[in-house]
Length: 168
Image (cartoon, rainbow, N blue to C red; front, side):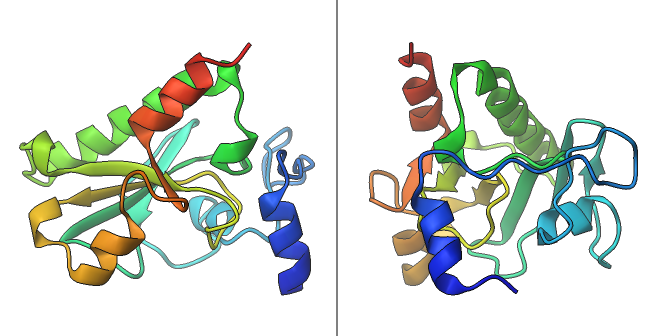
């Protein structure tokens, strides 16, 4: 297990460590210490609601709303702070996959959905993951605080896309 000081240092740096391709399939970006890599590669007994070459989805183990999904790149990607302009299509695909999962679960009112990322160093896993929460009106006090847009620790998918678009 990594030391807390090391993980905070890595999480707060502008670029996340890059994973070497050591996954089960030749050429996959895979971090053998990353719990999300283990989940998407079925090394951990977690139900995958979606999995393809690019994107995977599973339920959050500590749901902040009746519907709380994590949408992750299937291949290891650092955190949202390490993203660049060329990652815009990836972020857009994460959001679209989140919308598809919600629709499959009969959530159609997108005004009651929050899409976002924890901003480093305020995240627990250094593998890019989009939180999809619905309905927002049923989130408890702590979830409203933890997933509050405009805070130091949470950025909406829209805010992240704006940030990436404005990069040179």
